[in-house]
Length: 418
Image (cartoon, rainbow, N blue to C red; front, side):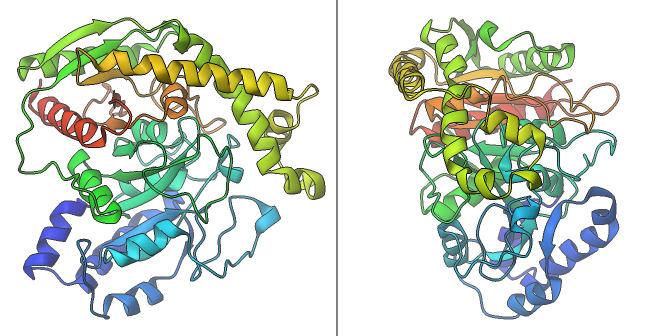
């Protein structure tokens, strides 16, 4: 994989030119893209031309990929749907402009599932082409895992950043809600949609997120002390598969061996209700966000999308408002979880990547999307068959630096574990 922080340091020192980074990417694309299918749109000639122009800012000309629900003026944005085939926005989404202002280049558009929902994309998992890379940020996760993207933006409404990162064995962060602006991005649920960032390691996404947001979020070369991890009881999310259970146990042992305190945390009763509320909120808001497509192009949409967004009995306004109330109650109670621990530690996905008939389920992610708390996938565990399974680190709302620091600590501990 391409390590964004290492590349940025080489660019800053003058040991590597932006054109050199572009050629590393081009070589990886030539070797792997035909088998992976991570890109929806790509213009390497335009990227090479951009690399020759002077670059400034913390990204130093770093090419960054964007999920294909993020508007770009220079490349089509098709939202993973034939309804939008050939659509060319006239303006960049705000996150694209922010990336460019930080010295980044638009590498290309990463494949998304249909309208960022559940219908599988054609992208394949770099570890096993018969398996899904996850969704909906399929191309972003697979592209980073295959070494074709140093950094890639995705979005999460349920588990669309953390789950594919776990399946593909890369690091990723879903920051605190609205830390990054969603202007110019296809809406799925306006109270939950959150931009996220993929990279090879935790310190790579910390570097990238800090560079783009203008915040002090880097964790490399800094001592944040030893975190206390709280292993959250998520019985309400269902039983994880043996591989995810093993990954979580491995992470607990690694953290303890590195000197961290690890304790068990009981979930407040509001969490189960909030977990159930997620589907109601998503269906209600998603049906409104996709009203035009449902009204005018229903035949071009998958049955999976139509049946969820247009069910036989849609949620009522009263049910939607009650679900929002359940989410608010859980957000209030979530603050108390961090009184005695720095971060929570949970499964990142139910198990290893399933086959390509599905993108997996978000049972271990959607609560934290609903709460708006920062969450990371921490890679470092593989099954005997070489399939990656991540673990999830979650901090309190607004504590993104804490989440990144604890996740980096854990990633280093996993690297030392046997």
